[in-house]
Amino acid sequence: MITNTKTYSCESLHHALYLAPGMLRHCCKRFFVNGQMRGDVKVYSVHSDEDIDVARILTTKRELYDSINREIETQCSGCPFLTLDMWGPLDKLKINILSIESHTVCNMKCTYCSETYYGGMKAKYSLRKLLERFLAADAFGEDIDIVWGGGEPTLMDDFEESFSLFAHKLKPKSIKLFTNAIKYSSVIEKYLSNGLLTITISTDAGTKETFKKVRGVEALEKVFCNIKRYHNAASSGVVIKYILTEDNCGFEEIDKFLEQLNKYELNKSHFQLSADFKNQDLGKEQTKSLIYLYKGLVRNGANSCHFDDHLRPRWNRKIKEIYNNNDKQDNDFQVIVDYIKEFQDKAFIVWGAGQIGYMMIKHSPLFEISKIVFIVDKDEKKHGKRLCDIEIKSPDSIKQVDYPIVIASSRFYNEISREISDMGISKDRIMDNLIF
Image (cartoon, rainbow, N blue to C red):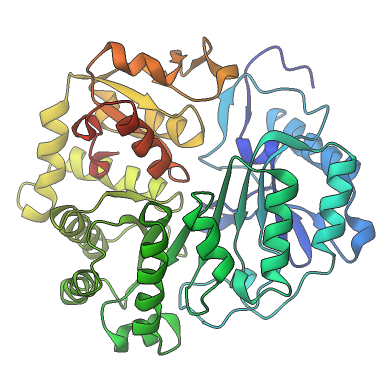
C-alpha cells in the first residue's frame, strides 16, 4: 500500500510485538463489537524457535494493515484505538514496543483474569534466541520500550537473567513490569533504585477476605509489605493499581484500601485505576465507585492518579452519557457535570500524539465544547505534523503559554507528569483525569 495519504493503523500494529506462550500478538487491547469482546490481535501461532521469523511477522503486519484500509473485515474491525494518520508503508520491521508475556504461570488466580493469561503455559521458544534473531535482523527501533507481564514475570524460568539480558542488549528507553508482588525480586529492586524501571502492582482490595475472593490467595499483607519495600527503593517507579470488580467496588472496601495505604505510608504513591475488562460498559454503581476511589486517593495526597487503556474508552463513553443526561438528581455524578461546565469554552494543550490522544480528542465531551490550541509530543518526527488537524509541537512549547495540560497517555503518565514538573511548570496545570 502506498501511504502518501492518511490511513488507519496504530502504534501496536506498526511498531509493537507481544510475546505470548504459543503465539505472537500485535497488541493487548480489548474492545467490544456487537456485544462480543475482541482484541489481543494475533500475528500467528508459534510452536518452536523456527517459527520466530522477522520476515513473516512483517508480512503479516503489512497484510493486516492493508486489509484494514481496504475496509475488509479483520481482527481489528471496530477497534477504537485505530488512528487516522500519516502511517509509514511497513516496508521494514522496527519494533518500538516489546511486551514479554511469554508464559502464563502465576501464583494467583484473579476473578477478572483471562484464560489467555492464566493456565501455567510456558514459552514454546527461547527468549534468548528470539533476541538474537531480532538483533541480527536489525528489527528493533532505537527508542524501544520493554514491558514484562504474564502470568507472573518473577516466576518465569531464569527471569532475573533474562530481564538483565534484554536490558543490557537493548538499552531500552523504558522498562515496565507488571507483578503481583508476592515474590520479591532483588533485580527489580536494583533497577528501581537506578531509575531504570517502573513496576505496576495490582492490589484490588482493602481486606484479607476480599483480597482472597478477588485474587484467589491469602496474601494481602505480604503484597503490601513488598510494595513498601519496592517503594522505599524508588517511590517514583512504583504504581499501585486497583481493578474494580463486582466484589471489591463497595465504598466500605475502598475505605479499607485507603486505610491500608495509610498504614504502609503509601498515600503519596502513583496510582492507576481500571475495571474488569470483561464488561463492555461501566454500570452506575461501578462509576460511582471509580469517582469515590479517585477522589479519596487525590484527597489523601496521591502523587498522580490515572486510568489505564482498558478503562479509558469505557470512561469516555460514560462521562459523555453523564454530561448529556445532566443527571442533577444524582450528586455522585454532579462533580463530572460541574467540572466539564467549569472548563467549557476554554483552551487546552494535549500532551501525547498517540492512540490515547487521538481517542480523547475524538470522544471527550469537554473537547466538543472547548479548544485544543496544540498537541505536544517528545517524538521529534511528529513535530510540525498534525493530528485531528491540530499541530504537534515539542514539549518546550508549553513554557510559552499557560493553558491547562491534558496528559493523553496511560503507559507514560507518571513520566510525563514528572517531566512537566522538571520543566519548572506547576502540576496545578495538569488537568484532572475525571473528565477525560
